[in-house]
Amino acid sequence: MNSRKQAFFAALAGLLLVAALITALVWALMLEQQRRKPSGSGNPRAETTGELRIYGGLPNASNYGHPVIVLTNAAYLSGYCEARRNPAWVAFSVGSISIGSTAKRPSKFTTDTRTRSATHDDFTAT
Image 1: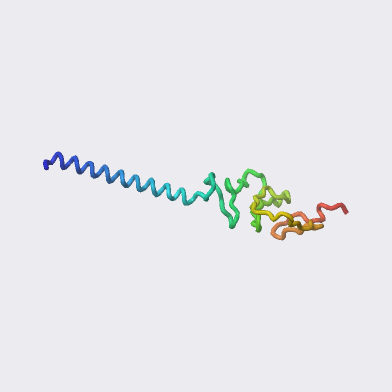
Image 2 (image 1 turned 90 degrees about the horizontal axis):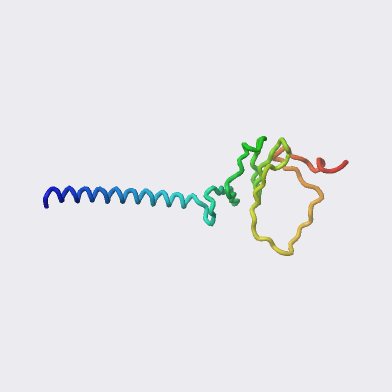
């Protein structure tokens, strides 16, 4: 084989090697992106906090105007604002509901001890 053919095949082998490396890199990036994306979600910004999946991520508290603390509960998250003594936002976990099961509504609510929140007496006329 003459040197011109050898140079051609060496260049072709080099191009194929570069193409294979680029393909492997793109494949690895696609797998990593798929791994980070929550299953069943069309939104790649979903945050998972315990058993709760917050689609779109947690709200941006910096635009709220007051500090917000995130309270994690059994079936929901709450962004609580001490200045307003109220939640700025709440994210619920929706699951199955048993038809026919009812619970008596309590006559008073209990104060969340993680905050300086409102008490039942704040909402009753005395």
